[in-house]
Image (cartoon, rainbow, N blue to C red; front, side, top):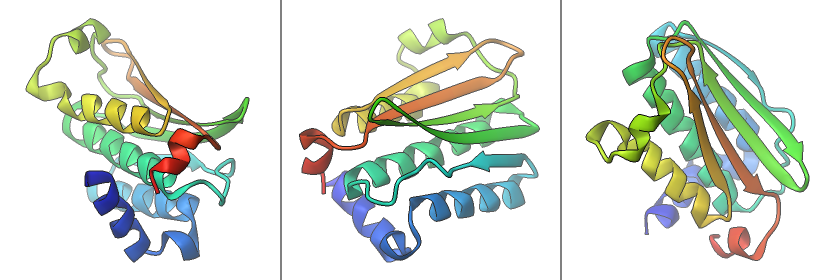
Length: 156
């Protein structure tokens, strides 16, 4: 139900007309304006023909990653990059904030529920979510999703 609601919301804001890359660029600009954190992005690798389920997953994961930056990172800059690799779309959201010990992710806490949700969203479309972070060195969240698969296509 949550995925269906998210897809409906994205359709309402013009996903089909404008494309995922444009919506992510808008989200980045809104985040920068609201927080003062500089956002640089390269979203040119995002194909326009991704399934709605995959597009929704990418959008929501990037949105949540930006919220984590706002809440926890104390970053000055965020980079959002898209690349294609071996039939997969890879989206990386990297900040230069305070970072954390990744070992803290193994203990369920209220502070990491967003990361758990992002990982679950990725898995629903056959993707993965990796978190790389070190105290004082920032955090990078890497979402990898298939360009096409029965699992990804089943979500729309």
